[in-house]
Length: 342
Image (cartoon, rainbow, N blue to C red):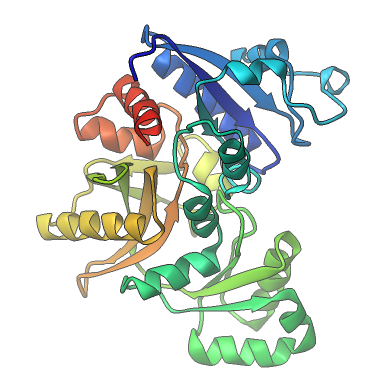
């Protein structure tokens, strides 16, 4: 680890509904490494079709220019300068980026990369598998039911009755594999439930239905490999009905409270559960773990883990570490060093 400078391949964009968020995160990460003489950042932009663009086009996108369709590649080809990369930073969110697929490619390339490996990324993206792993680890969660598109098409009335008996209303319906609250609906009656399930199953062949709870939404960031650390905890508040895509990515719709105004014992419990969730999926590098906190009963429920959370300078993950004494540029450096260490 004495080589200087390291060539860092910044991989962003990709085939995901979070394409634009990935570009914003990549710009922030590039800015975070800009002042460090140990790194030479080279951008790699993946088009919405999953095709690798030239270094020139990648730099243009990173710099803020909109690329015309005619400029994009038409066939898959790994750019020649990829061979010069020493360590990759896959700043990709959602399917085809955060789900183990790109991590598998980078593993085959035998190059270190920032963040979670194939197993952790895949489990963290699939809500059904994630909840099964969390249950095995003894982590408390909201009640849920999973079903497939074929099951729903075969017996919709029976599934509705089962969900009503087991979970009641309101409930939340989510595609099993998707991020940024895409395809998520809140159902308050059977008609809304039917529409919500149909919507979720239009995005994925499996979906999950969760019992609705009146709770505060608490988040905790994790950083590290074999000895991970947990950040201070934060809270998200919003005036919309639930934390949907529009609320998440519209300026001013949601507020971050760091540190979260909760009792110290709640903070400590959330931090321990965040580390437990991270270890349960064999996490490496980074993750953000989201929780429901029910003050009336002092109950803490793990909601989900994000294996490459939003990484803009104003995103919750870097903000949590900033409040924990790790500035943004140092955080970016630590993540690259953790990848090299691993």
